[in-house]
Length: 113
Length: 112
Image (cartoon, rainbow over all chains, first blue to last red; front, side, top):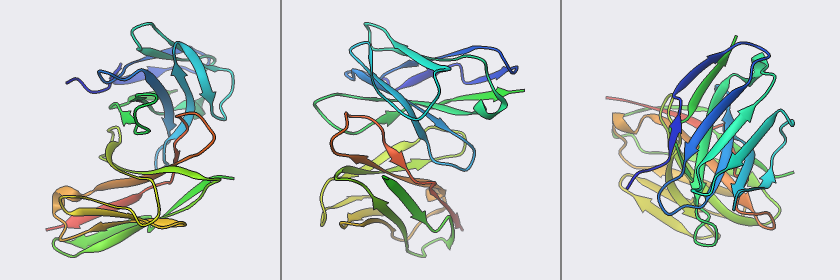
């Protein structure tokens, strides 16, 4: 049973560029949440997708956007990258209506120079 | 404002030396409290979910407990492989199934 997968593993971008991160949820899960984790901090909620729509959003600017596909996989897009966007980006999947537990992928380490 | 505070920030133990990690929370109605283990550079690994005060869960050397204001993660006779950062998160009632609010974590080091 495949767990949550994310790609790429690492990414280096320049300020002002745009980036797309990808996530495939655990088998049987239909909901994807994205988190940003800065070094030495706990993960911070960016947004959640269910039925291909953004269901809930944390305190992040509009530069952060996302998408969910019919197969439940998801993308996180960040425009106009800032140095402060450097972090570990985590995807978590869950099953709406079944359990509140979220299972995380290995993350994508984004470095903005 | 919903908030999670974990203590201590770091904990160094000798192998076999039992101890507890604390997670204090303030939330407008608790839906669930979650414990995760995170190794350096990796994603958090799910450990436990607790839903109501008085509930306890166990897994190998770990035991999680919950009161109305805090949760404890007890580690009995730890081994070096238990070294990791342990994260606590809460989910509030009223919202959708999202938005886990995390603490900063406790970094545990177990020396042989």
